[in-house]
Each structure stands twice: as C-alpha cells, then as structure tokens.
Image 1 (spheres, rainbow, N blue to C red):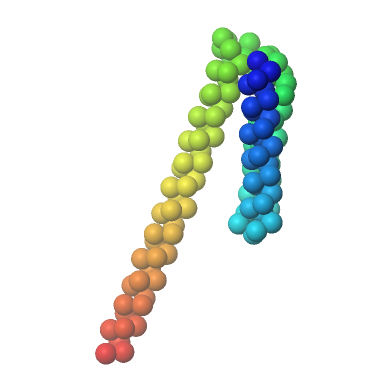
Image 2: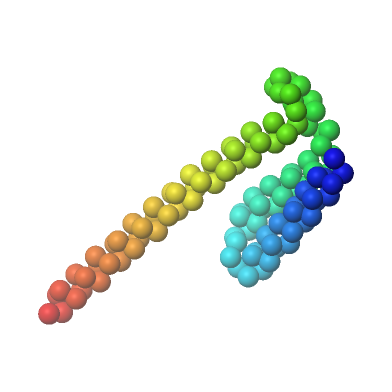
Length: 110
C-alpha cells in the first residue's frame, strides 16, 4: 500500500507543479488554476489518507476505496470530455465565421 501511496504522491506533486507552470506561462486562467489545484489537492489527500474516504465507501455500499476513486475519476473524465467538446465546437464555429468573412471580403474586392 505504501508503494502505491508514494506513487500517487509523486504524481500529485508533479501535476501540481505542471499546473503552476502552465498558470505562470499564462496558459491557465485563475479559474482554471483553482479548478486544477482543487483536483490535485484532493488527489493528494486521498493518496496520503486513503482511509478518509471509508465513510463514503460504506454509505454507498461499495467494496473498496478504489471503487469510489474510479467512479469519481470517470465522472471527472466525462465532464472534462464534454467541456473539451464544447470548446472545440466553439472554435470550429469561430473559424468557420472567420473563413466566411475573409471569403466575402475577397469576393467584394474582385
């Protein structure tokens, strides 16, 4: 168990460091920084104190703490995937509008 916890702490600290670097490079807004910091601090807390989720596991009638962690991970992944899809869709719409505007300008110049 200690090996898995150590591995989790290393991953969590690395993710915190990368999140901070992306924020310093202005790739993340403050809102995104806070979101990711909450995710990674939660991950670290569970990695260091895995028994802290035991009451929730019992309440949900799950067998192991890992089951709860996997459920939470899937919910987060689905949420992020949906957000990524929406943002990609917006970018496609903006690009399409820009191409149409530039095409119309070229047509009117001729």
